[in-house]
Structure formats: C-alpha cells, structure tokens
Length: 390
Image (cartoon, rainbow, N blue to C red; front, side, top):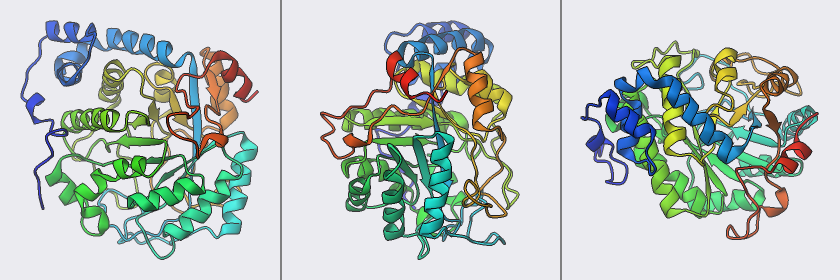
C-alpha cells in the first residue's frame, strides 16, 4: 500500500523534538498555538504540568462554550459488517449473532430516545452491507429527522453524491474516525474489507462536507499506534479541514480501545493521565472546536473532564443494536464503562454548575446555505436554559 502521507497531514517533522519544562511553560502561554505547541504539550515533559494545563483548558472551554455540556446518544442500526478490523466486536470473523433493525423497530427506538429528552442522535452501522446500505441508511435518517433536530451518522465512507443524498434526507453531520493515521499500523489492523483503503477513508470527511453535511467529527482510536503520532496527525487533519471547509463545523473525539468480543489488546495503551493530557493539549491548541468524550470512559473520569476541556458527551448509551425501546442484541461493539442513566448524569453536571444542553441546532436550517446557517458552538445563556432538560 502507499505509505506516503500528504504534506498537510504528515506529523513527522514534530515527532523527533525533545522538550524541556521551559518549553512546556512557553507552550502554555502561546497566543497562536501550532504543531510545535501541541507537540510540547503532548511531550513527557508536560506530564508534570497537568494542573496548569487543566486550568488553561477550563478557562478556554468556558470562554468559548460557557458552562454547558452538549448531550447526544448513539443508536446502532446494524451489526452486519464486511470489515476485518482486528480491534472491533463487529468484525466479520467474530462469532456473534448479527442484527439489523427493521424500519418499524427504528421508529420504536427513536421514539424511546426522544422520550428521554434527547435532540441529537448518532446513527451507527458497520461497513456497507446488503443489510445496511445507502438506501437503508437514507430511510433511517428520514425517520430520525422527523423528530430530531440534529441527526448524525457514524457509518461506512461514501462518495460525495451519497453524502448529498443523506443531507437532503435530513442528515446534519458525519463522525468518521481514521482509527490510526500511521499507514503501516492501519494496514495491519484492517485485515480485509473496504476499510483497508487508508486514503479512501481519510478523504471521506472532505467528501461529506462537500456533499452538504454541516459538520464532521474526527478522531483516532487511542491504543493502536504511538498516541503522539496519531494526535499530531489528527490536529493537522482538523486544521486542514478548517482551511478547506472553513464554513463547516468540526468535533474531535478521543476514543480509547475497550474490551470487545475478539479480546484485542491495545499495543500502545493510553492511561487516564495521558488521556487527560491529550484533551487539555487539544483544548489549548483548538480552543473553539467541540471536544467529545463518550461512555467508553469511566464515570469518575468523565465527571472530572466535564467542562474541563470536554464540552460534548454521550450518555445512556447502548452499543448493542437497539436497546432503548426494546431488548437490545446480546453483544455490543465494545463495553460501555459509564452506564449511568440520563437523570443521574444531568444531576452530576448541575452539581458541578454545568448546564446539560440538548439542542444547539434547529432542523429548519438543514437545507439552508452554510453561509446563512444558524449554528453556534457557544449556546447563549437563554438558549441553554430554554433547551435544557428540567
């Protein structure tokens, strides 16, 4: 496979540097953060500066997002997959029952999620399959768009015109993790299937934004490769999209390897201390991009990170197919660590003087020009109170 990264993505120039405590202190005060800033804040030397990094991250989070945490929920539509991802519980060689929700079941699941109070839903599938193809996904998006203001997808990469058809159906955004930006590691981890094409996946967020979707969610699966390499490349990917699609929105997630049916062991494990350092570094270097933390992480860690760099979270999540309006399938894609319900989680946020936000987007703007769209990552106090769940 081609292992040459485009110049705009390649993190190599910043990987060989060694940083001192003075370098980290300088990075903490940088007025125009760049790759070198991020590299310093991700360095071993910065591990001794977590407290000032946290303080800086919190100040920037409050400046750009207030005391709000935006909430969403994932809905797995299908566990059918043609891919051979070594780390995934839905890989095609896993000995597990496969399921795909019928449309009537999709409606039932969506109704249950709506009744919980959510206004943003993330629809997920495995790689493209006869059970979960574009036509199936488009119909599911239409059903979701009837009741949710923000409908995003985390599915297989598509062509620009396919993304455009989903935008017309009511889809507002796409989440698509590169998994790892290290080409050789990527090739080993993706043993077969369409996902083995590194560049076809890498270019999918650009195709999605060109096709009319309003935001793209980026991320790398921490644990697959050297985390410093992946995080520098992730930063460069985000900056590239900010330049080429400046009118669109971005989010960045930090998923870590979790237990799954195949028993995969992360070759480059990332502990909570390093994960916190990564999140603080990204908030300092990308102050106005929403940072996302899912229920992969423990309740205690999520409580500590809420408003401290992270301003968007999932909660009450199921990684099984369905499970909200009916009994879910037996096995999920991975184990959920934070299994709290919505009310308990919102009570925790309010106890920390944070406001749970369920809506910062109105569905009426789905098909308007991106230059006139009503989308603000910093909900005004009035909007935040109005749309929070009491």
